[in-house]
Amino acid sequence: MSERHMQIGEVAERTGLSLRTIRHYEDVGLVVPRPAARAASGCTRSPTSTG
Image (cartoon, rainbow, N blue to C red):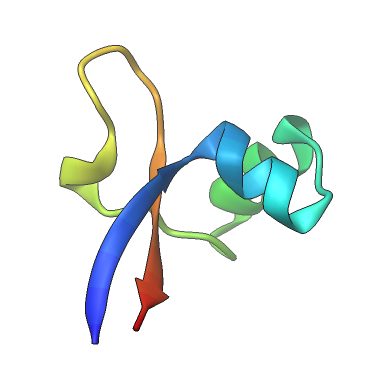
C-alpha cells in the first residue's frame, strides 16, 4: 500500500468539509498532519492511502 499526501484544499473537496472545519479538526487533534507534511508555503498535506 502506498501513501500520498493531499493538500488541505483537496481534502476539503473530496470530503465536502470546509477548510475551517478541517483546520478545527487539526486544532483539536482529530486530524494530525505529519510534521514534514507542512510545506514551506504553510500548506498542509494530509496523508491518504492508495492502492
